[in-house]
Image (tube, rainbow, N blue to C red; front, side):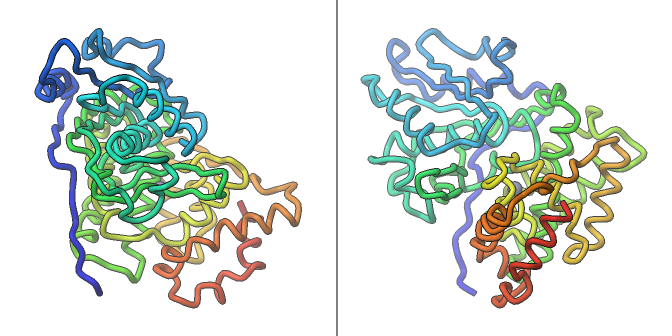
Length: 361
Ligand code: ZN
């Protein structure tokens, strides 16, 4: 196998209250106090709350990112265009929120130093110049966006869901403050944490392996098992900390691994039915006994112990045409499917078989 370079987030800070260091970190990037500014992409969930107001100065730009739907290339182009109209590029870009806000900040940072549109860079290693300095502050744990080398965007023109997979997409600074996750609704907290659990399960069950990736995944899974231990509460303070670290480690694992069967089916649910990534993963996971028997049982025990229900019947009332679209948007993910099932995955996941699993959901 080809030996490739790996890169992780350059600097990270971890601990309850770590957010208090944000302004000092940003000021270290500012050379001219009268004209340099920072841009904040903050999840719209925090629009009414003012927990970040102490870190934002007069010249700074604040954009609330609507995370109802996953980011699109058009949306990112709009944000980048607005900044290009200002006379100066920002000194720093800050993403605050879940995967959506963190991915938007990454993409805009790359577009500040690379010409053209977001869609030009969807793929592997297409970004030519390092983006501008960027800081990630996750407020929910599990997507791994804070650590990964991609930023996923929907491109409806090309019917494509793909990120700018590049070493320049990796954050320069990460602030992990577990207290920021304490107000996340319980079901959302669970679904997002399970995104991480599922990434790690798929990586470790695949044939494309990397020892460093495996070790990150194993440690992330060990932490998940502590967080979702049935005798405890997944959202007590110690578990908020462990879950945030699990997400970071799982994100580090992604760079050196591929997902498996669950993510391709999940992408089908997102593309065809518009179901959010983390929830879609959980819906798929609950019917994947044929591929991941032990892990599905464990996943169900986690959900039961924490009182979380996974929606059922999401594919009832679909037409044959819908099922065909579901099949196509699943089977297109060749790398992860080959990782899980070998190069002849299409002989295992036939049209009928794919439909069978969707019907079970
Ligand atoms: Zn995922």
